[in-house]
Image (tube, rainbow, N blue to C red; front, side, top):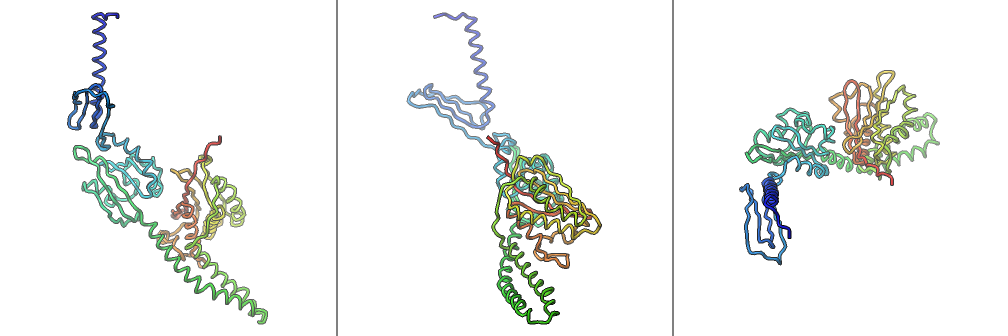
Length: 421
């Protein structure tokens, strides 16, 4: 066996000492408590949260046991909270409520998809901005900021602004007692209110169908039966007024029933830009020429990699209804209609806009209410039925309007296409 020289022993000792210092430095950087036991060596190393240096214990070796490692990690203390948020973000995107994290200054550090979609913003663009930029409300109306001000969490408090619902907040503190994060979860009750409305509409519709539809059918049948035995002027009255009015009443009942109890959708996967450009475009072309309307398209090419699952006929009905509403609101000889599509978070955002006179601010909040109409011959069922169709597609529909025109904004979930093998 070759004997090592003094210089070689010294060099090896220095190397071992450096390696030992490296391990010690590593253990100091591990802030969480742990304990490692090596039964063969008869040694254990333990680190406690209140003690910065590891503690080594010796005991009688036992070669029959294997080593073991135990640790306790507190995510609030031992992990950078940014890493915790990165881990939680894809999980919280699955929650159908608004979840937002802010720091002690009200700056957003996490925003889930539901909150971003309902606020109509790009999720990544709001990170680093103040909470008021997301909600577009005065600071005194934002419950999350009230939690920062009072350093007190909020439990199941009802919010009565336009984001009607229930809010809860919780506080995560730094070791020095300052606020690290305020976590707020908001449960919107607007959809529940709409569901209650539609439930009431369903009960009313069932009563209407039973009490009115059958007598209407009976009256219509007798009118047709007697028409051949009546004078011509009465026959003209029956054909041009009475029967059309009975049919119109029956159509109103049918539309109302479709809102309350819609039929089954026949879903298929399609490329949304192709649907807008081809299927819808063909239908709008003749109507546009007839009414002196110019239709512009602005379609996002990123959507080429995505599909939407829709009932094509039902969705065509929605856009045709919006187009006819625009035509009926036209006050000048010409009108411009623009249809755009954008990939937005995990949805396609479709905007259907016109440059008409707009909807007065006093009634814009009621246009989706059944039977609300400003037109003399309108039933007030077209827009409620359109929104119901979009909701059945797991989407949303809202409106923005001013004196420069009206935009209906439709959002539908998209499905990323699988790469072909």
